[in-house]
Length: 634
Picture 1: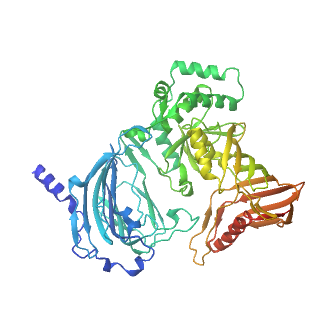
Picture 2: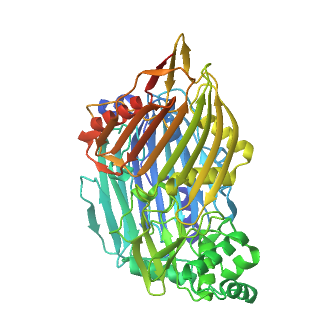
Picture 3: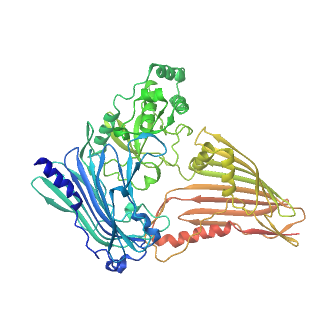
């Protein structure tokens, strides 16, 4: 009887949701308002997450997209990852034409099953099931039903009905079921309808619904997507993964769980302990000790992702890293922690949401919002931050990947939320000095020395550290905006005595740089620092302006011109000030030379939508000023 019952349950698993009838997905049934600015319409999306116990849950959904044009084709994909903690129960799919008539269904053989291992991973257990009908007769509709079984409860799914620009939503719902006695935590954003809570004898059901959400049109410099559209972030209070149980009701409690994952994993082999003592012997300055050990770690390890089972969250032993000389962000940060501990220096294993994610982080909602690990070393006078996955970054510098964002410091007492350093207007400095000689035919020979500091040097650092000399030259030839030129020499020098600085030296010859016409020469004095930011004014800006990067550029240019020429006219000194930044430029002519000075300060901050056209005007003035010319007359 048990086997028969199991057979009936599995056989009817695909019937969790009501089936669409012929014509239900006809394009004619889409409200006209949902077609405006839309490449695709989410006709319906019903999601359900059922927590069965502290270690088990089932996530299922049925979703249908009507694809209106080729820009919406990406929504026709169905793809799900699975691993040790996730099992895909089923994937069913159906294709419909514009009238809502069924064309075909997904067969088991149609679903690709391939490795989900990323290129940077030595080993992980991710696999990926994928399907696409590859239908291109617009409009058409795809419908998918998916079930995924969770063997842990550390993460709950989010409800994000509208996941992209230019996609509207006809209807969507989310149900979360939890057994009695298991708390549920959630944080809604931009959700008009309150959650509907139904309490049963053995479980509590939470339900959200919405209808007719118009497509959003992308704008420049918008805030995080999660601020613009309905969204509910969900998280457990109590949870379990393998043999570990935790609580994330507070940052302190979540930190205790992370600390338990790494407990006892900081034991170094005897030979490494000896090396630590040798590297720090006779040194009293903790900064120099940290730098020496960080340099040792960088030179003797490399980053490789290892995401097998619990290894996605738990660091490998310090001894493993020492022996194998590689590890992922967790393992390398834990290894550096062990090196410092052996030297008598206290540090904190630190979780961070790296990359572009700094724009959106819920400090008031403790949960696992992190994707990376670094190390924090608090000292008496300051704090040293270490990015342990990099073999090239200097000690104490985080780069734009992890700077200026909340992070969770972890120790045996739990977790504490703090913020990584912000590199500001004066830190992110680019200084450029150009010395040029213009001949009578209009060719300009230039020697250019540019220093890039802090965030301004991040891309340059990555380029010169990860590319051959030939590739660097290729990049320079695409980056420089001149009609015809040749780079006859280039060199880079790095200085890590304070904030990192890279000095770039270029020799450039630009044919026909200036236009020679009769007795006049027309020459642009800003050869390499012209702004390319050109925005269109609008009267319908909807969203705030979010500028999250600030910097200062200073240019000085000296161009010697052929003898016998004088300026017919010179531009007036220019100063532009706005809430978005400051710009100044000055041009003089002396001793047969054009001398040009330019300073650009880009501010960061959040600005109201009504100020957008003021920002357009500010950047437009800079765009034009950077392209001004001097007319020389013989």
